[in-house]
Image 1 (cartoon, helix red, strand yellow):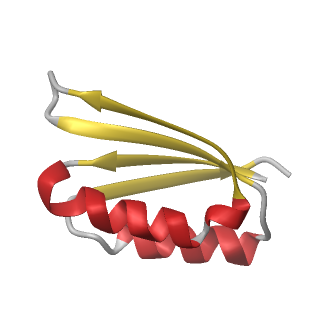
Image 2 (spheres, rainbow, N blue to C red):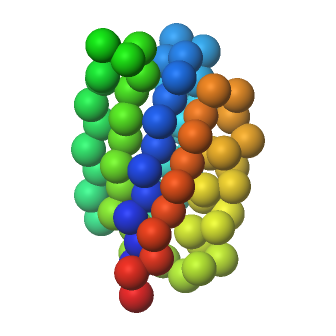
Length: 77
């Protein structure tokens, strides 16, 4: 189980790619919260994921390869 934080710097350019990747891992997603932070010009998504460390690494790796996207994860169990 992990918590993943995603910050999207250019929403118009990157949001669709981020959502497509998250949807492809939808079977692992326990919860999702997304908030546009207009004062900073970013969008923030937090995910709770229930999967193996390989699953988590694959998901965060794909998200992190998108231009303008920053990803951090914390594996809890």
